[in-house]
Length: 171
Image (cartoon, rainbow, N blue to C red; front, side):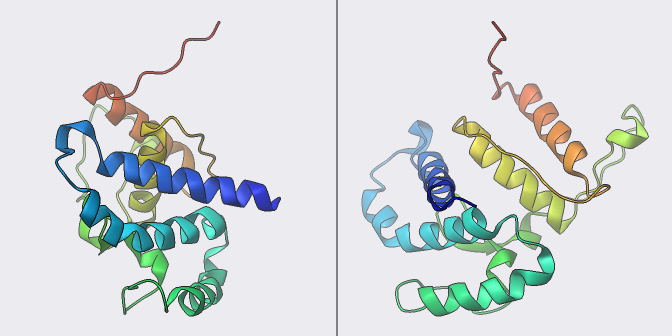
């Protein structure tokens, strides 16, 4: 990886989280609270921006490294790994499993388009949506059969239904 690409990815994640936080519909005077939460936003963005593409078997090693480097300046969640947490709308750490939705079967959805919500599909859908809202590029990599395509299609379907996604027309 090129170092500048990693810095750019972390910066885009920070920007996306903060723009979501200061969404104009809820942008009451939040500057003071935001200043206090910046370290959590940075820690989350660092973990996912630098090591989001790391194979899960290596997450523990990166978690130990990140906790060691960040522990003096960031109030990190005490349990689990940093990969087990996201930064919610108030910029606080919350566990991913708190937002995993129950599976709802829809008979009109073809079998290969079904998305069974899991911890992983929730993580990746959330990250995809946060970045796409600020028009940032996203690329999912991984082994075959890990729900990459279904996750992207489900996110797009949801965005189109809520009319929050407006693709650029091709020239």
